[in-house]
Image (tube, rainbow, N blue to C red; front, side):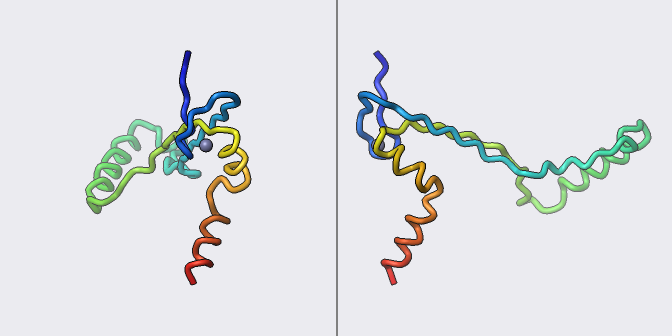
Length: 98
Ligand SMILES: [Zn+2]
C-alpha cells in the first residue's frame, strides 16, 4: 500500500489526499519568427544573429518551464486553496513585525 505524507505539514495522509500541480513558464516565448525568416537565405543571417546574441552577456539565462507537484492533507489543502501564493500570510507576517 502506498504511503503518503503531506508536503506542507509532514503528517501522514490516511484518508483524503489532495494533489497540487504547478507549472511555471514564461508567458511570452521569445521566438518572433516570421515566414520571411524561414527562407533559406534568411536562415543563415538568423543563425549568425542568434550566435552573436548568445555572446552578449554571460549572465543571460534562458527562460525555463518548471513543474511542481505536492501532496496535501485535507487540513493543509483547505489552507492552501485560500491563499495559494501565501500573499495574505506574508502581508500578515510583515505587519506583525512592524
Ligand atoms: Zn498537511
